[in-house]
Image (cartoon, rainbow, N blue to C red; front, side, top):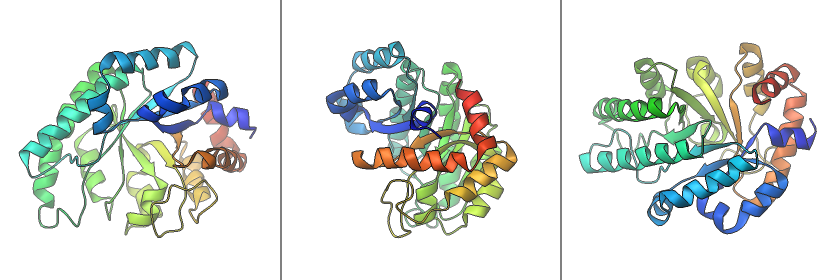
Length: 276
């Protein structure tokens, strides 16, 4: 697929502060859509008018975006109630920011680490139900789709239970291929079989199975074709996000995605119809 076409149908990850301080002219020149990253420092540093200003620039230039919510130190089902309240506060603000940007989705993490919450999983899960309920109520008011990402979870169990609790109108699954490769003890096939139907977004980056390197597509060992085979066969058309962490890996990732899409023409055709 031609590079300019790929750029129209994919989102590029970029933290909000780096967008403001460095990359906005490049984004406007190259006309790429964005996954705008938020964190606690960004939320403390910037007020709503600053987010609104950038949101207007993005919209006026005919570009689209998604939002990546804060995640460091946050946990949907935190055992400590103060941490849980901080989690809700941060994520509700992110939802309001996503609404300013007219974001097509907001990605968020569970914050569940099996090593940290060993022995407390059921309590964590019950707490998380209450948190997600609050988030979905706010998202529904904004007509914003939330996509729950996989990170440190060993299995699909946490996601399965959350997805069975809430319908898919405003809660979907963001499958991060790099995280599954490094952190999960469950095969990609099982992730696809058990929660693949809820996929609303993909995070695309590569690694060699040792660490979450966020390399360019094709520089590691991830089986992208297997995932896209599943999407094509099941007629699932998620949003696609490039999450290469180095500027020099963005272009190779776009080119690598173009080659993948060339091998999956039915999926590519559906994707093009979706974004046009």
